[in-house]
Image (cartoon, rainbow, N blue to C red):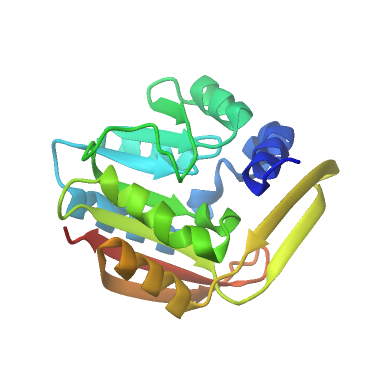
Length: 212
């Protein structure tokens, strides 16, 4: 039987081109996201690469690269990685799972995980954050965004395509606890309502730092 990660991979492979068409320009309408990304870039400092974990078609990776940051996008979906490489040849993209990142210890000076851990089950959060910490330098920042709540939303149709994917909502305490257990010190948290063009959910952003 396919694992949940296999179902996520296949679903994003299916919608990769549609995802690019619909969402590759989304940061233009997300001023808060841009501000938080800029804060992470400043905290990461010069001289190191920033990982975009769950990079999709690479638009956040490209945004980071446009600010002079060597950025590396990593995604579970081979089709998403192919789209990202085609659309943003100036950046590096790798295929990989959040639980087994294709990166060496301490490779990155910062990392971004915007709505990528939402495809993990609650008991996978801590090992995923431990794996992210492994590839970060000591003191490196991490920006995470999730949907707030306790539900699991399942999609079997997405933009007219057949898929099989779950979206996990997390309570703030669950996310913060997993980060702390994995060795991150939380420095800031922020909640917002959805923008008009987004799916209507409440969002949580957490800026943390590798404390080990």
